[in-house]
Length: 294
Image (cartoon, rainbow, N blue to C red; front, side):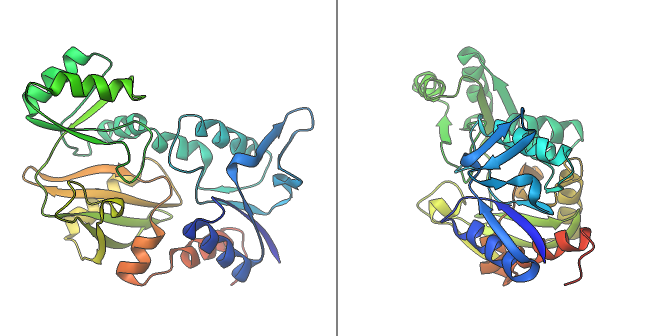
């Protein structure tokens, strides 16, 4: 029996499914709510209630909380302490830290010459107004978010300044803007496990929403992209070194661009579009790294 811990949100389909899969394949799994983590430096331990995280053979990450928030970096630091004491964590918490912050992810992608939509980041509303004028239409994005939550489309016009101020005042002191791109009605999720390509699915948007997120009534479907898109996604995920990830790629008039690299990947998209059980792949990958035959 191999003792695995799954860090995730109890009651969330993907977290529960990963926990159940780990229980089935490894013989032992504990689902841990990251909100319950406690770091006790005097004892040199991290606990979740009565559960000591140092007693596990490995820890698998699925969620670090509900959505993304700046304080979740502290939860990752607690898991980094566990890893430093000898318990392997998949993905490495230090590597996850580089992608849950949209700006950190963007800077890494840009530093590695990954094509992205024209982007401006500033704390100045004046500079943001100039960017809207230059781009014509932008998507304002919170630095910590997922599935398009909190994003806003802002067009050039008389109300651009007031809308940018409202976005800033809604908890976004750093204003992150990307030019709104013309899309073919979908974008792509290109999936990797251990740095190796798995498959691709598409998120197709509805007529009622500007984005393709399933929260905006988008749907998953199978798609086989050309080799150049797979190669682009491979280059995009490589600097992050995540165990399981999905690279969001859009086909635009200026060519394919990368929206972001996901910290945790999309289980449901793989299952609904490709009938691939990502939890099964993930747990087997971890067990293989531990030298456990399945």
